[in-house]
View 1 (cartoon, rainbow, N blue to C red):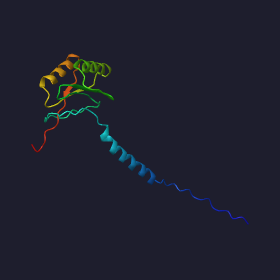
View 2 (view 1 turned 90 degrees about the vertical axis):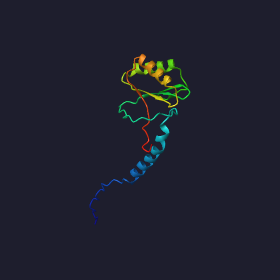
View 3 (view 1 turned 90 degrees about the horizontal axis):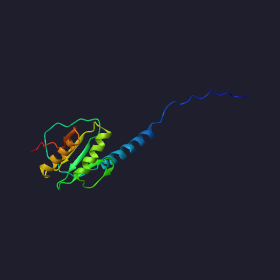
View 4 (view 1 turned 120 degrees about the vertical axis):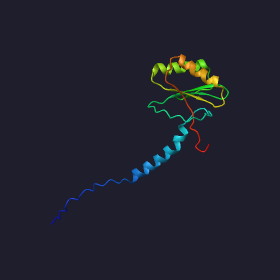
Length: 142
């Protein structure tokens, strides 16, 4: 005589342990790599108690170093010291392609005030009206 077995029930549970392991590894990788993605020119910013700007798009940051050299971040292109005309040309190209782009000027606190004003005046003369200054918040202890 042949015995007939009842059909086995399928187990409908998902084993999530491997997914948790993968997520933890990804979290650690992103925590290590995120600080390395920040690049730029070292500028010692002045302190101010103004409110931070909230924007949806990433702004273009133009830096004025202590020696008076200009730097502009144009995507992955980290260039060396540029002239005022070169910076103005890059800014005009960016403004033409994305008219709502915010331009921020980062001036070292030891740079001559005239160099920052010269840059801002050149940018405004080129038709850029969304222009701001970058500062650091004051220390609470001081």
